[in-house]
View (cartoon, rainbow, N blue to C red):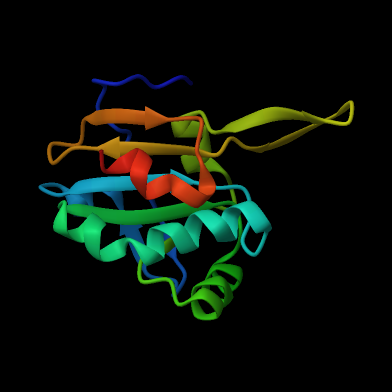
Length: 149
């Protein structure tokens, strides 16, 4: 499935790092940065999470709620949050159902080997739940600058 700017962001329900249910519709009335990333504790994903952490106050002042999502388990997310003191929730999508809704579970190719994985993508969703922007060429170390212009 391929989403486009102007479409309503698909609602979903999954669990955060503490096992609490979390739904996109819980954030109706707020702007949401929903960022899909491949794996906890990998260099690019850590750089991206830490950039969002370091600029979290600016993101909040701009009215954004930040939600990270990967196919890692809740336990992995919890360790990642604790290790890097991340101030925002991470959503566990082990069955890839949210990835499927957002078109971020894709075939990748590395050194001629094909495999399925997460396309690092950020969706900026407005207060009404409409996709305002899709960032598919994420600069992990400067991601906040791509969100707040």
